[in-house]
Every structure is written in C-alpha cells, then in structure tokens.
Amino acid sequence: MDDRQHDHDEAERAKRSKETAAAARVHHQTQWVEQQLRVAMERGDFDNLPGAGKPIKDLGGEHDPDWWLKKLVERERISVLPPALALRKDDAELDARLDAITAESEARREVEEFNARVLKARYTPVDGPPLITMPRDVEETLAAWRDRRTARREAQRAAVAAKVEPAPPRRRGSFRRRS
Figure 1 (cartoon, rainbow, N blue to C red):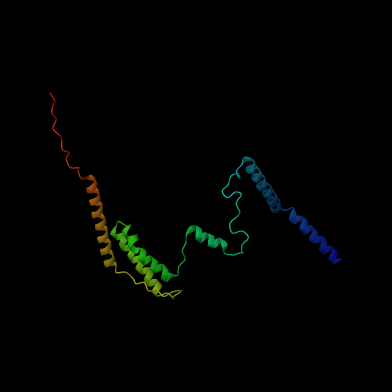
Figure 2: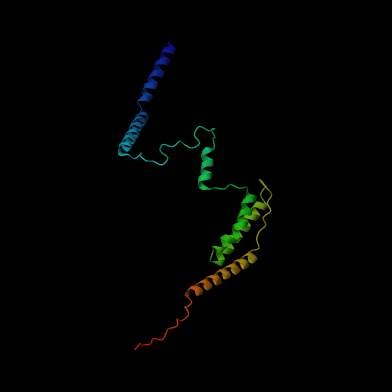
C-alpha cells in the first residue's frame, strides 16, 4: 500500500509542477519567441545577412572548450604577456607614450607609474622569464622628453614658416604701348 500511495503522490507532484506559473511562463515565452522569429522572417530581417550561404568557419573541427576565449583575444587584439615581458614592452613604448603628452606633470606621473610597476614586479615572485627591466631615472627621462618636445616644436615652426614665407616678388614687365 505504501508503494501505491508513493506513486500516487509522485504523480500528483508531477501534475502540479506542470501547472505552475513558472512552467506556464516558460511555455508562453517560447511561443512568443517563435512568433517574433516568424514575423521577422516575413519582414525579411534575415535576408541578405553577411555570411549567408557560406560555410560556418571552424565548424566540424576539434572541439576546444576555450574557443570563445581564443576568439575574444583574437577579435579584441588582447595580448596576455607575463609581467616581465609586459614591462619590457611598456619600457620600449614609454617614450612614444610620453611624446603624446603635453604637460610635464602628466609625463612625470607616467614615468613614476612605470617605475612603480617595475618595483612591484621586482618584489613579486617571478612567473615566466626573468625581469630585466630597470626603473627609469625620472629627471633624465623628462629632460629627454623636453628635448624631443622642443625639437618637434622647432620642426613645426620651420614647416609653418616654409609654407607661410612670402613668395619672392614677381618681376613686372614694363608695358610699352605700341604706336
């Protein structure tokens, strides 16, 4: 008798769960989505999409559980480097970044932040290649930045002067009247 009662209770529970509000919402939601797709197809929203009629790239290859991460890195051009290599790259690009800055206080802050990252990496356990990047001397780096900035300004002034320099006076011919 217990088995029959248990089976009856299970059947009742299953029946009630099918009739819950959540189950009804899910059912209505799927119908709504299908209706929206039908309407969009009738309007032609899916006609002439890019890639239509072409095979899906990388479909049928080996399954890679990290495929989405690799696609994200490729699409967003994200570079994931060990700290030592990232600092080498930052060191190589620091002068170009500084040259884009116009205020000395901002340039100083940029160099100091770079030095702080280098010092932090020095006191962190090494993961990957050894850290060979050294902190920059702030005053020397800023002096070089000032020199490059002055040279750029002089070059710009020379270019402007070359364009604006008045043309040499044209020689006017003398007009003679013919008699």
